[in-house]
Length: 286
Ligand SMILES: *[C@@H]1O[C@H](CO)[C@@H](O)[C@H](O)[C@H]1NC(C)=O
Ligand SMILES: *[C@@H]1O[C@H](CO)[C@@H](O)[C@H](O)[C@H]1NC(C)=O
Ligand SMILES: *[C@@H]1O[C@H](CO)[C@@H](O)[C@H](O)[C@H]1NC(C)=O
Image: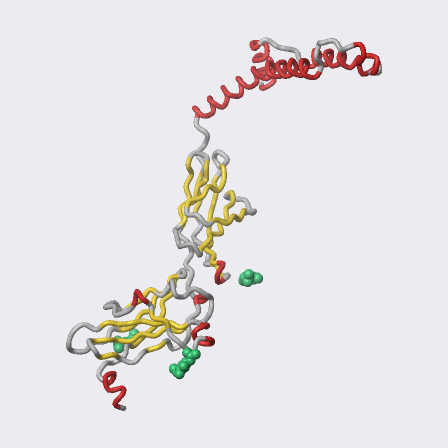
């Protein structure tokens, strides 16, 4: 060995260096270097397209992976663009330093393996909710759902972890599956397994409450209509007489309008007593 490299001769370089990348999380791993005489530490550096092509082929040390004992390094934050990266690692023991070991081929995050998202669908009352695995800010989720037995599905896009999909029809079964999508690399995962959720059949209590609400509405409507008519009458057709000067300038037809309005109001609203109305409604319903 040349004298300059003498200090490197005794220290073997790390072997089997590779990047494991799943769901946009990237880890560099290597086999441990075993030599007598104490702990071996490792340091990792990376090089992006910019450093390679425009910065004199320079390397950037990864702060969190300098002189570490572990044989893996989380390089997720350093791989910040969808371009080819090179990474290298070397072993250090005391004053001895190994050669750098670099990747066999450059790494591009576009090759990350995307797993189908874990999802759990549930019915909360009549709300269809979906809880998705949190995969980080780079991810959005494409959720596909449909009524069981029907072909047409709906696709919606979400980025949060728990979402409200739909108000369910009582007694209907809904099925859901999802894909994870990463815009930065324009790729989506495979579909998750399909999950189906059946909406509860409406309970007796809810039915009664809804029925009571309906009856109250039906009974108050005529009163409301009458009230509105009263308001109309006072605001649109005030009973205050017009000054003579004005009367002279309006054609007779316009002045008569007030009388007609009152008449039509009277005709439109027939205020029924509640009992009669309930009778009427029950007859119609049966
Ligand atoms: C590298 O990996 C291979 C197979 O995975 C293994 O047989 C070999 O021992 C490893 N090399 C070192 C230096 O650990
Ligand atoms: C590029 O690297 C060479 C050799 O390492 C060095 O001599 C030169 O000054 C560097 N140039 C710049 C611009 O850093
Ligand atoms: C993403 O990929 C699809 C095909 O997989 C392509 O049709 C689309 O144009 C791409 N979008 C972008 C923004 O590159």
